[in-house]
Length: 362
Image 1 (cartoon, rainbow, N blue to C red):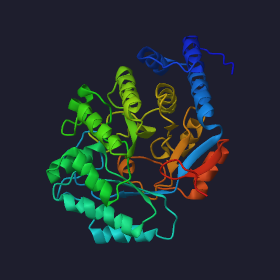
Image 2 (image 1 turned 120 degrees about the vertical axis):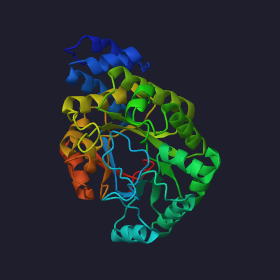
Image 3 (image 1 turned 135 degrees about the vertical axis):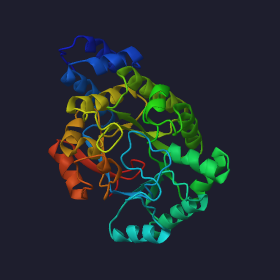
Image 4 (image 1 turned 90 degrees about the horizontal axis):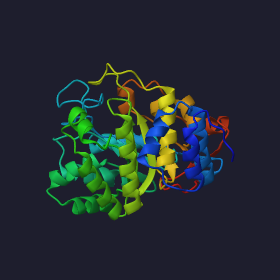
């Protein structure tokens, strides 16, 4: 496909893409710096179309955040509470069962389960949590716990990383989300989330999880204090892990929302930056099959546009999203299956409902 570019520097990158040549760090920086958003989008859309044609995926899923009490209190988080603080909560097994039963008649394919590092909870709580979900929803995939939670649970139980993962897997853990890495960079770790595991530990854990046969997603939290250089390094680190393990299912660029956080002075991300992060990730992550446009963070309308900028997945129905909305997200807290289909159709794509592992449903 012939493309003309406003920014001539994109021609060399497009030539590399056509030859299936891996892009360098310098290429990644150039992609972020370009003012030729349409040219960038066209290259990313070429890759997206080569992989998925006109298909755009979504899943019938539900979020379950079992507690918001967290000892880490990262500066970018609006969700976490201290024990005893107003609004702090932890769900008992009875409350979890009650919440799951609220939507029991709906054909939910995936439960996305994450929470804070609550020091009142013992390791048995997490085993019971998984077993309770699996008892109530035996045919639903449990996608639970970030690498941060896995590290915490390993220390809590006094078990090796491998044994911790095995016990969680035996209890029902089938997949993991990609959060907790934020930006794989020491400077940002020290400035924004010093109590959370650093990037080297995150990479060690995600490799162990993949080795245990559990697929994960990967993310990048952008739009705070990170530089373009640090964004590209993050993408390259993920690409290297994928070369080694093949365990990443999808990549999700996450737009930072600053309201009610320790960084509330920062402006929201722009539509241009949101689309650039989708497009650049599609081009840099040549060994990732799927790139998500997470409608919760960038809004439904921009997520539709992102389908023409390299994204092939809009995530899912979600039912009740809490974490980003606590930080000021203005998107809906959940969408119906029909609404997901309509968003994709209106953007000019073919909606494909999937399960957690990208197998088409129905």
